[in-house]
Length: 577
Length: 40
Image (cartoon, rainbow over all chains, first blue to last red; front, top):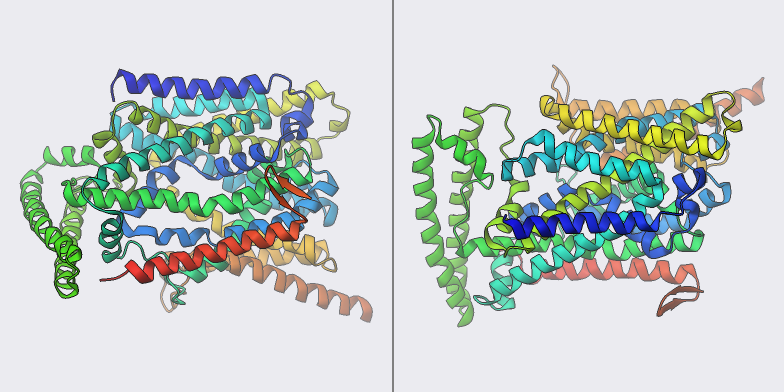
């Protein structure tokens, strides 16, 4: 990073913010604050939905995943277009017709207040914790790589977001997200063009695909039926469908984004824009990771991409074993270089047998490399128990800092910070809207007599409060390492149940509030039991093998089934009495 | 009429069908990519 990079970074961030703030100078009243005054066109809605989902970690870890295992993570998104079509066709008209401010407000009209508060409460717990992590996760990576103070990075990004979210509400969020998304897309496109041009000096496109393909990194679709495998075609299509239905259809941080559309048509078009662009975009980001893999076939990669952790390791008693591992790594890399040349020449003269032999040689080198990396990870863990030893999130940043030209480095840093801010702002605004509308205004007597000014003032206080809470959680996240793991699966623990409640509300009119409530408690308990039976062991129990994407299907299915049965039983009882 | 600037659709079903068709094509292409270049 030099002065030019810092200038690009500062100009980009401030520019986006100023353009966003200029566009919201006319926002007025509570309707304007919570629903962007319902004036947004489809393109703004679409980009805003896209930006809320894409957090900084998406741009740090997705290329890392591409580097490590290739394109298979894209399967996670296969259910998304189907979910968005269903939401656009069935959920959206109901939200619009009822004129609600929060998704959970609808549940009171359909069931009762208890259901509204239960679902809104589940959302607040899950999203409140996640908002802290959205700030913390990129901050820890940036502070490690640049040597910046962690607390200042958290305060800098978090404070910036809080300022404009409190000031301008949902419209400021959507308007700044539009600019942030433009920066993100521009940065990623420039990075991939630069990387591709650098690689094309050495390989043709076919050779690139062939080298990446032989390592298994282009096997995007895994059609095996295996509940234990995290990303398969089926877990992506079915589990991903349920996850996306819950996230986009019932999570206030998304519902609020598309309720800001000027009308039903603009909101629907915004969602369809996402349905079309999401998979190509994720594929593009993963493919950058694959290109980084190709790059490090001819450039020696570090033995661990978190080089700061590696430097610290050199100061400990592990320095000697580390030097041995590094020497072994170099030797392996040099052999791999020769085998790669053999592979390319076999490919160029179209000799399948020599190509197969070279490919097997490369595979052996890759396995050896993996083992050395594992040894180094074990050393880092041994000298510093509790430290994160996975380096997936550092791969792309290492490439950016060491091989991209100045200016582009600053822009890519702006991409990461823009992504962090865009998802945090959406979350804060949604959290504040639920706290104010579902809890404060609903439960406090006399709230309906508030003036517009009072409503906006309360809304600002609620946003600021959630901002501060997210900051506090981000500051203390370091102390609760296990909690972070927990929050990552927390979404899937609750989403199935929340979706089930909405499915009942929208599609099963005969089920009443009482049956729905008990069915929700039952389904949530079942999902938690399945999850904890995998995490903890106790005597005499069999581990239930299920990856977290399937929790959404389980929670939703159980809830609808049990509510149906309970309603049937209560109807029989009523008719008997 | 749904109008994405130059792209026009007569009704929502048409647009939804297009979205699902694009998803199907993407899956087939990704599968073929793995089949052609995948594995050792």
